[in-house]
Image (cartoon, rainbow, N blue to C red; front, side):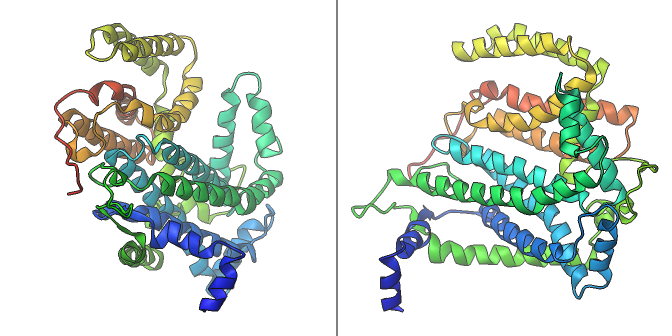
Length: 448
């Protein structure tokens, strides 16, 4: 083995790569529960690729055969039902892990300098996952898949001048048809997975360049011994490979429990309307996306004419009040101009246009997080009380939006969705201010 590794190292930096990213990659010694989800996301990505390969061996991307081929996989292919459920439930598990992973980055300041690029690449991965899931959702060619795709693609119609042509180009037809199914299949099994693998690679490389953050928000590279090893660091392998293995085992216990005993998830993981073939003449009673899209779907539905008037008024008030807030002059000017422009636009464009814009902006604002957070400390352990209150309200608003998006529209639910929408955007819009309010705790020089 020694001779083989010597031969290999002369031709490929195998040992160097192992040392740089595993055996001599020095990580903080106080990782906790929240640091499982990065590894779990990689595990699920591999699982989705492997199960997807086996599914494509029997799936037919044809509108006359697609639904029947899925039924064939479920009923006649040996262990086909298991592979299909692993893949379908794996999509939901993927988003659970990703949401928790992003939340950890939020509360521990993992988006802050020097990790802005790590956060930005992670946000692009999130968007790519949404595209991958949406395209895969059409493939079973169930009735909810068909109508869900029809509704979501039609949202592009609101784009001025190019919207209708863009929607037609995405579908490949005037309606969701065989051309749509074929191109979604190609993107789902080839293009987007390749993009995801490249993005994950870049995400890891960028992370290992600057080093992992920790629950204390302390840069361990600033305290090194004479050998250049961080005093508060330990090697990723074997310490965290063993620790992460425990997390992976626990995850699979929960994940396989759902796969074997509750795969439909009460209609949340697999909708009942998707167990019938696509029918362009029979619209489901309630067209709703999968649960991990419902927060943004609620924001879309919350956009009404009355809501825009209220939102425009609140934004105008915020612009007027900005000069009186205690913060830096540059923050005041930027906020005043931004709020003013938004207030004017809210009174110009209609509710449908703003619904799509707000749904898109709900994702775009995540990319701005590294520059919105002005707190002198990174970790929530040492943050001031206003930040902790804001995070709590944000989480409750996001969960509420997701819940409301899974249920039919009513007068009360619309008001609730509109309130949660305001709270969602206020979390980001007011972040430059409340992150500087209150008293922060002193950050220790070494890890606790």
